[in-house]
Amino acid sequence: MSRVSSESLAQAQAVLESKLGSNDVELAKELFAVLGIVDSNAGLRRALTDPSREGQDKVNLVSGLLNGKVSGATNEIVAKLAGSRWGDPRDIGDALETLGATAAISSAEKNGSEGLERLEDELFSFNRVVASSHDVQRALDEPQADATAKEKLAFALVPNASDAAKSLIGQAVAAPRGHKPTDLVQSFLGLVAKRQQRWIADVTVTRPLTDEQLRRLQNGLNNLYQRDLKINVNVNPALIGGIRVEVGDEVVDASSASRLAELRRRLAS
Image (tube, rainbow, N blue to C red; front, side, top):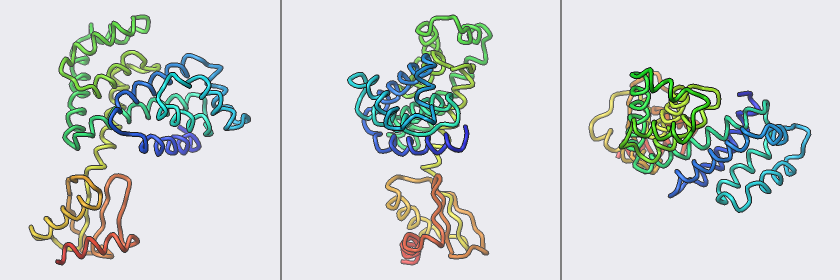
């Protein structure tokens, strides 16, 4: 994906994050359904990614198509995509796929890191079962096979899978978009791993922490990020500022004086 498309995806992801809530699996299904519409209509895809067309014109186009058919959250997310710039017509479909998968993954995240770990195990289990049978591989890879039949077969392979896993696996087998279903599931696993980083704090300090300091650090970071983080502590005597924290894409270091000061206060008290 080009830089301009990546920036457009990032903006849409920010909108998605603000819409995540109690019904994320349904949101994922709607985004995947919109993806199906975009993928099946080359003219619409070109219209939504035409750089010479006004952004609001493209927003109006997609809103007219979706109005009354999807939730307000889905409409707003897709409108953000439509009004953005894209380096390649396929990129808007890739973005919809990523956003739909992220919504499904978020539903598993309601149970914290344990929910994400379960989802990861379910997706790995599906790929392992498929890899163990050439007949299953042929059935799922057959482009002319009925999508509903392939979904039924896939769900039979992981009968106790969560709704989040079924949403992702169902999308992978019904609409692999030119990929093998297992390869698409593998890409979804990459998104799960990225989401898991939100629950891990990599902490670098200048000297080893005592058990009491580690407890205070755990409490301080949990309060700061409003979730129960897993903490990995690394010691680097050359560190400037005494402490550095990485949670997902966010880095709290010497430049984040107020937040570090609060953590140092907790460690020292």
